[in-house]
Length: 120
Image (cartoon, rainbow, N blue to C red; front, side):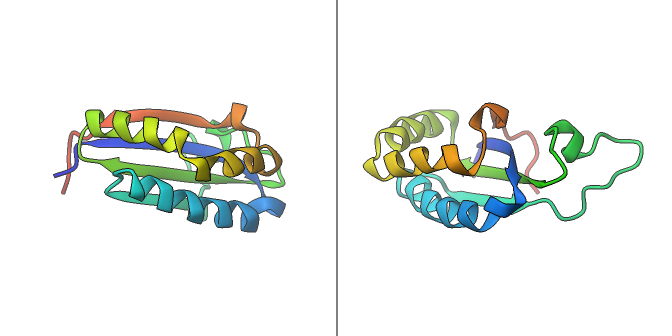
């Protein structure tokens, strides 16, 4: 049973969404090759909320941007740490990391590792 998740929230210009999707599709293969049990990249669709903080506000998106909500699932933090080390040294990532500069501003990306506390 998986017990660890890496999560990402990324504001991406709408004009770059198709390119982002192509890069994310390639990245998903790298994550899976290095131990991710599952990998998801989602684009905001219903983000207007009442009485809560919408992702658009959280990500400080501009009018021409969308919110990407992504996560990768691992068996454990140890497996995640091992995978991330391998992912970052994987030669397939070098080109993708360079392309990211043109697709979105990585300094505005939120990232964190999470212990699973409920799985249903």
